[in-house]
Amino acid sequence: MMSTKNKSKLGLFVLGCGLLGIGFIAGKKAGEISPVMISGAETLIGLQFSPAEKDSMIQNLTNHRNSFERMREQKLENATAPALYFNPLPNGFVPDQNQKPYVWGLPKDVKLPTKDADIAFLPVSDLSVLIKNKKISSERLTRIYLDRIKNYSDTLQCLITLLEVEAIASAKAMDAEIAKGKYRGLLHGIPYGVKDLLAVKGTKTTWGAMPYKDQEINETATIVEKLQGAGAVLVGKFTLGALAMGDVWYGGVTKNPWNLKQGASGSSAGSASAVSAGLVPFAIGTETLGSIVSPSTRNGVTGLRPTFGRVSRHGAMALSWSMDKIGPISRSALDNGIVLSVINGLDVKDKSTIAAAFNYDASVKVQDLKIGYFPELFDGDGLENDRKVLDDLKNLGFTMNPLELKTSISPASIRFILIAEAAAAFDDLTRSSRDDLLVAQHKNAWPNMLRAARFIPAVEYIQANRHRSILIEEIHSLFQEYDVIISPSFGGNQLLITNLTGHPALCLPNGFTENGSPTSITFLANLFDEEKLIMLGRAYQEHTDWQKKRPPMFDK
Image 1 (cartoon, one colour):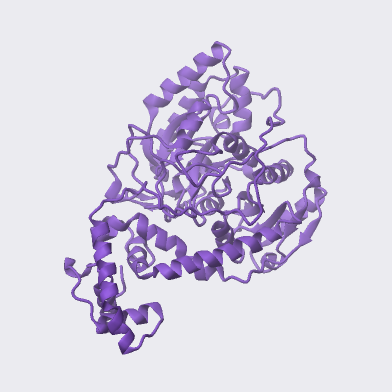
Image 2 (cartoon, helix red, strand yellow):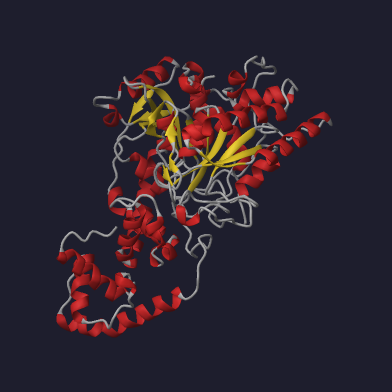
């Protein structure tokens, strides 16, 4: 909600609406533009013009507003991307496009647990070996997860759509293929779920928001098609905070399996909660500004935010065309690498995708990686688990090299790029006043933020992206000497910076607080260097066992 605590603020809002032709107040169309209106708008944008300058610009402003109104006569779908595409590649940087065979280093045999709960908490890497060796069928595995979803999803408020019939049919088909000697790869017969901002033909795609709770999109997202092609079995669509913010959706608040009095964080709340509680071995989430990292931390699971442009977003709800990224949430770094090997790649349906190889090779000596860290971010109370990670890696033979996270650009000053793009993505929601249907209506919720974003000047949006270009070059320079840089997940402003620059991140559980809440550490790499994240993450997780911990209430 736009703040109207006093008449002066309301007056500025009305003046701005009159100038821009938004017409929110009482649903009335804005009136004739005058110098007084321009004076009010001046205050909003922090500029000042002379009386003569104001008078001279009236006709131009009127022409602009007429253009706005003509554009609004043409309905735009959320899926319609702007003609301008963000490219995170620094000057002269070209991703490796020579894709080599994967070397996963999986065991030849895995023992099948006797209890269904123990099977449910196995990583994808073990489940794939069991299925390939015919020690468990995809149908049985799928039924185990379906039963857990039916038993626990209401408690966690993490599910929007259960695809039981479709999942059983798909699992049976995967079993039939294996019986005939056809094996599609490591995800053959593996159940999974997706965040419900991904379109799946024949299902609702609600975006977690009341105005769209019955929405059906007549297509299937590219990422889902790729997973289906790899033999994975879709069992359900999980909750997200409304329009990809937080853990509050139209049906409630998604819960953290470690503490049911606490939300799962967001916005990939349902995906992270479901993986944490053993309802699926992996799920797909998205991140624009922390929506994989935050719920992975809160729920004690492992999340991978890929490089911007590595994974197609076709069929996904757009929030910020230049910042949205899709990635897996699972039990381990290795599992995320396995999923990434399937979902990454150029897609003609998404012009923002970039061709790049993902060459994971388990035979490469992980100690050859050069590791950096930001020492200033590890100082202070409550960071004992993060500091322990540095000690653990030293014990594994790595040298920890200190470096400084310093930029000439203030990342907080250009954060509004996200909000401006979100306001464009949901322009119709704001102008139609259907934003009143969203559950969250506080001042930092989407309705108010999207309304306020209407007053971000186009010039400043472009200027912010010019600043962003400088930021990209500066962060790229940090990775010229280091393969992986380690940071507390929410240390300083690294989360904002790396989301603005499009760099990949691996968020791993690294312990618990005194009250039993999971904590995490984040590994960062250069653009399209996810294999290095998986290498180091796997080494760390084989040395520790935080990723194997189970929420006691769901360990049955």
